[in-house]
Length: 297
Image 1 (tube, rainbow, N blue to C red):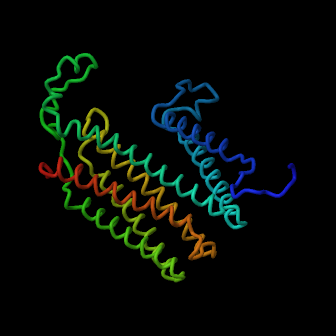
Image 2: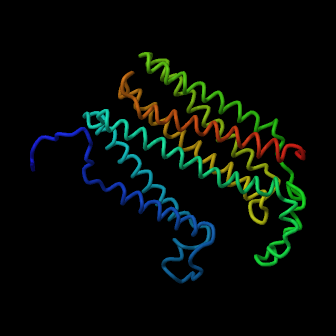
């Protein structure tokens, strides 16, 4: 009956602007990325040239700000819902299922990049002989008779990649420590563990940026470069996202939002971080060591 008391455990979300603003921000970011890389206007007399010329950052920056505003507003609303008791046990189960399915979708995302890399690493000789396919798509497969292709100078897997592996594994232990401490009411230990995890995530990202700056192979024109940068680059993006996720949890923990009994926001962040750890182990083992380390200089 209209206006009556709610007689179920499900949470009916109130009308929200965030799906619209998030979609708008993502569109503006994508358009801004195209403008920054290629440009959409070459007419210097046009009023739009300033915003759409090759190399312009205006649209990309605007899209980023819209997305950041959406994230802050949406997360604030979710936190308010949790604080006023809208996240009942039934809703909590739904949140857990949602996070699990999200991580599974992310796993399949990385499967695509591993598939492409393994395809050429394992079957490059067969692909090199497929001249008719190469002619059809305008690609010379003869350069792929060996893997990595000639001229590719790969990274030493036991230098920066190994250091980053140890950093990420250590961050997995610190986030587990923080979760365990929170479950047992040790808020100080949880704060220290979370802070260390965030700092380790920043260290990983910094070292990966340094590594990319010293890469001796490009992205364009090389299947090895494309698959390497897409796989490790998207993983790096996930590390940045996970670091922000954990930083928000740290701020919430310092504000007293989490309790030993109710802290799914932090638990979801820990799941995501462990997923990032596991993906990196596969990247390190196969991309850096098994199929590239033997020719590293």
